[in-house]
Length: 383
Ligand SMILES: Cc1ncc(COP(=O)(O)O)c(C=O)c1O
Image 1 (tube, rainbow, N blue to C red):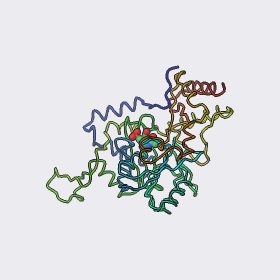
Image 2 (cartoon, rainbow, N blue to C red):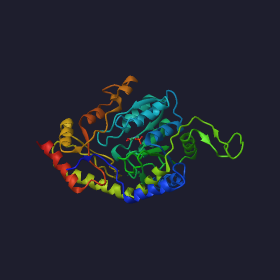
Image 3 (cartoon, rainbow, N blue to C red):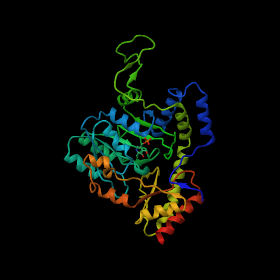
Image 4 (cartoon, helix red, strand yellow):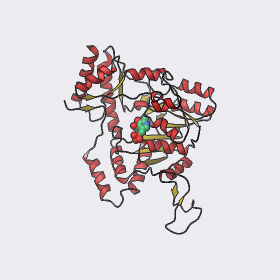
């Protein structure tokens, strides 16, 4: 069997053609394919505005800036996420507070968030992560955020296309701008939509949208209605300190082409997850992910928990199956330890980390490859 990674991109001839057309066009960057991708993405998630940027980390950083995070501002996030979800707070000199995860869905535990908000009245915001593609119930989180005067920036890097059913029976798509001030996506190759590097912020708030656009490109504006002076057609002003977090037209051409197949990919991801769920249902010693009611999971990752995770990881590697661990809790990272976090801060996350393993899940995984993975996992666990 050829090597099977835990995730991989799916590039078709039409993707290649779309990028080739961008390469032959007048614009490699700052051209029309960027706005086209933004509009298409905003429609896909049901938000008013979308701002495409160079990667998901840049999207989080711009989001934190637009929300006004500054020195010492407290922001709550989960320890079970990629470092960028927390680092964006540090880029703005804010303070990260880790709230432990829910033992069933592995996302941030709302009860613990509430306990922190009750104790520390000066928390400014919450960054929930739709971990592995499971959509956090932002309706419940909104109630808390409003009660304690916080903003929400949803890290939806794992969950484009996922949704939960709201209390009125409404479908709440991740990133729709209705419950979080901002939502952030990544287009890294293992994600649902791949642009190589790439990211997006969605929002329904025009003022935040304007800030994101400004900060994305050095804080520079050419909009005549915003200029303090105007010396002529060449004139621009740098009105804030921003960055070059722009994305290119080639990448957006690929993103638009990929986005057209996003729903197809989601269905295939769900099908693969179902097959794993059924295959492992009767096997003692494998904890499967929660299949929740009223939730459409985006299954960025399929994570099992086993007693001997290192053993299984090495056994799978010997069979050319490259599983991965998502994630090492951020409160155990030397950097966050240097800021005061420590082992024992997030016991549920830390126990999860001891046992979790992400096994292959991506739309082009063949049925034969999946059967091979299932047999290998069973062989090890049932030994
Ligand atoms: C949950 C989460 N947040 C943020 C990021 C950062 O995205 P990027 O790699 O595009 O910078 C990632 C990507 O790995 C992620 O998984």
